[in-house]
Length: 299
Image (cartoon, rainbow, N blue to C red):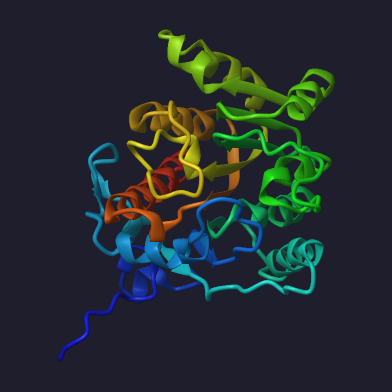
């Protein structure tokens, strides 16, 4: 019986378009999952995104081209961080990224749980002083500790905050500790989902422009920041999230008013829902890459 196989390449591009030496985009899959607290399955996220990406039309209507062929996409081998401890996970990811010898390439990391992001931010903050994080998420992720560890996925923003101030969008689940921390901290700015929803003029985008104008930005996309009607396959699908087109407008604004140096897409849990979420994640990543590449004059 024949077996259907997907290429181990994001978008399934041909060899010439996926050469490491000439590709402007490198995709790094990290299928890490260790601190999931509700529904699991994020370790399956990177492979599912890559598989779904092979079914995308590469023609981007907004770009009026098959954009990927203009800049090239190289998919790196799956990286499995050391599991000696949760802190060691973060350190091993930071070391691995530093070892990639990234010059001007855009690194797009596919998770895995959000616990991969502190190590990534740490690596890029060392390369880009003054780095800022723009985070799309349902959760503040600002607890100092959760389930007995400061390295839980519920604490990730608190762990990377010493390396980069952060702007959060789509937040609609938080705890008293996080509320108080946000009030006292000058390193985190929060735009909650309910506030975004009633802001019909999208004034939050004007505020975003002022915060990021001319800066180097790390963009972290937790798919649960979007509404479950877009991404139901995630560990904690909070109602009332960002819609598809509002999310694209937000990402486009980030790319047009800052220099995005790295992106991650995390918390897809494909074990929990249909193919629709996998496909949406693949398309979201492709659209995000295209926005970044257009801002760099490569599309």
